[in-house]
Every structure is written in C-alpha cells, then in structure tokens.
Image (cartoon, rainbow, N blue to C red; front, side, top):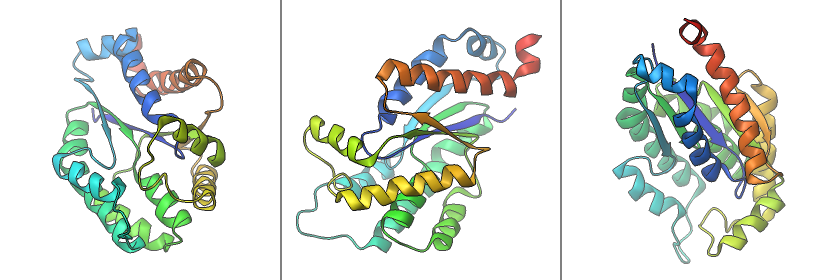
Length: 227
C-alpha cells in the first residue's frame, strides 16, 4: 500500500515547524500506528521540509531565505528556485518513501508556492500550477493541515525569535496577501485542506492536529486496524 504525504502549511510564525515535530512524536507513540508498523504496512515515518529537504535543497534554501544584502531576487527566479528544490525533493526523498509505504510529514509543499509566489508576489497562478505539476510529477498531498493565523500575529511571533530570514523580512501587505492565498486554497480544496486554529497555545493546537490526523489514520487503514 502506498504511503501518505501529510503537509503542514501556513503563514510565517504559525508554528507549523514545531507542530510537525510534535505530530511526529505523537504518531510514533500511537497504538494504531505502532500496530501498522509492526505489520509492515507503514515501515517508517519521515519528517522533511521545503526548501531544504535534500543536500541540493539546503543550498537552494540558503539562496532563497538567506541574507542577500542589497541583491534583490526577481520573483520569477524565486519561483523557479522553489520549483527546482521541489523537483529534487520529490524525486530523491518523497516518492521513494511513499512507494515503500512510509508516511512523510512535510513542512511546506505546493500550496506555499501558490500562496507566496502567486498571491504574495502576484505571479500567474496558471503558470505556478504548471510548474508544480512538473516539479511533483502530479503528486498531491493526501492531507494538508493549514495552520490558520492572522499574518500580523505571525510576524510578531517571528520577531520574538530574533533575526528574520529573507521571506520574513517582506512587508505586512505581502504576508497578508499570502494569508489570503491560503484562505482561497482552503475554500477551493476542502477535501484535502483542513484548517487548524493556530491562535491557541502549542498544546491546544497539537491536540487539534492529532485529532484530525488520527481520524484520517482510522479512515485510511480501517480494515488493518480492526483485524
């Protein structure tokens, strides 16, 4: 049985990276998941991120998010670098893992490109869809958990962490457009994208995420879990 790709998405400061690690730890301890692993149905649970899920991706991440001083990056160049990172990521890590039956938990994927480069930068959405198709070979997440948070609140959280990366340094208007992009995607694809209220505390958000994922686990593997 093919594995499952679960993605956490959201604006800067929504807590998705933290929640991904909490979800990973919770799944490793979950009775049903351990039962499926013992039966060889889910060999492993992997965590990864975009950009930077491969060795090439780490170099691209530095280009995309590192401090470039006064050297501006053209929006189309940014889009193509993200597509290159994704193509390598899917080919090298994600598709082989899914073929083995593994679960892959990914910090950002195709929806971030639509939200950031499409709605945020104003690039053509049809072009972005084509590039995502090329980069992924048509791969779509089985479940996307969108941590819904007001962009201004998220940016305030990032400032508390200290130095901001290149994307976090963009103005509030840009991040509000990105937020609007995620909202539009959630409305367009409710069968795949589940909204999670990210305003609460870390533990509260984690419980909501796990409840959703546990429900899908039961749905996807029901015959094996009840056998």
